[in-house]
Length: 293
Image (cartoon, rainbow, N blue to C red; front, top):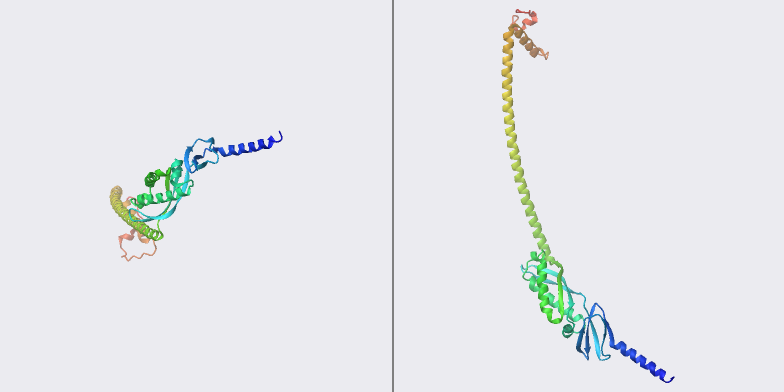
């Protein structure tokens, strides 16, 4: 019994080694390609515990999640001959591990380099037919869709699917930026000058209309004043005539007193009259009721 114990221990260790070498797990975020002496045998996409032939078969794991690849900034010539420095990226996933392995091997470095090259070429082709206004407007979504479709078509044989291609940043070269800023400034100055000219025209028209209305109003006011003044003077004349007809002597006396007030009110008036001038009769003799003074 004592001699068989080491043998049993050795057998147990061998079984454990063989078991650990023949069993492997596949997580939910990965997919596995099993190879035998470098040749692909099968693809496993179901998560869980799986078995393989130990020491003969090899398990190669591939990420099944969405992966990113950054595209180096590059200068692109647009359809309107504008130059644009484009910084972009792409998102892809491995959809066929067997085809992916046959195309680029077991690492992601190969597919990233290939994908960067394909995205760069597609960017140049598509943007070469678009204007700067389209790239900087809501048309960008349509442009990105065209680029994504072209990249998917070229990358179909690599076992990957490109979910999205995006322009992270699009800048004009420094020399173009200054030229465009100068043109924008000139355009804004032209618009401002036009707005000022239109405002001056409207202002002049408003002033002319106001001046015309003022002239019309003053003319109407003068006409109304002259009319009212004439009516007042006519009414005063009628009133004087009525008063004179009722009591001529009183009317004469009242008018004479009004004349005295006008002449002597300031105290600085000088009159050169003959002694028998009738204008001074009221100063010589008070008037009598019902008779002449």
